[in-house]
Length: 261
Image (cartoon, rainbow, N blue to C red):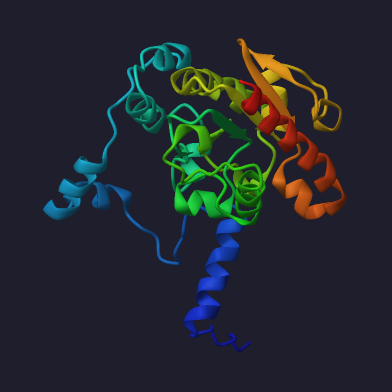
């Protein structure tokens, strides 16, 4: 039986590799057995050792809870370092980057999404794909931008989860519960005037409810004294353009709240 020729075109090979990554493959296994004992005995090149040491995050002591880790973070830099060093969430093993935040920390408005997607995982920033581009246009329509330097026109953006779930699946309850103290500390450090929760997961997490976003959106709620406006996720608007009317009404409500304050 003749073995078919393997493709040699670089674009075809890259597409095949990307498809494997989307399926969740995180390890390449060759046809020839590898002696792990021999590999372990072989020292790393000095350059690689130095690079690894420079990139290593501080270790988290065993048995320390996420509540304790989050509570001990006095600023955003400490919070980011603590999250980067945390190894308790399995999502980290399959993600390329920690997606911490984007925007101006002094912003009056803080947007909380669900979790990074493929584009966000690659860039290490939240909401940079098609959904993020739509979100930017939506915010610009009410005079807000993640790039604005002035706090009154700025937006700060983060997610419930900092790592991408495989195949963009919905976050699991235990994953959300594990990372929730970090999110709570994140919000406390930013201390925004208004929170915008986009999508089911973000709204349910912040408001501690099982009610769906269709019923939650458009109604002001509170998180520890901070007004919260639940909204449809931009991805839902891309799938169902008829939802844009409701999203526009919610944005106008946010603008009105800011103007009144």
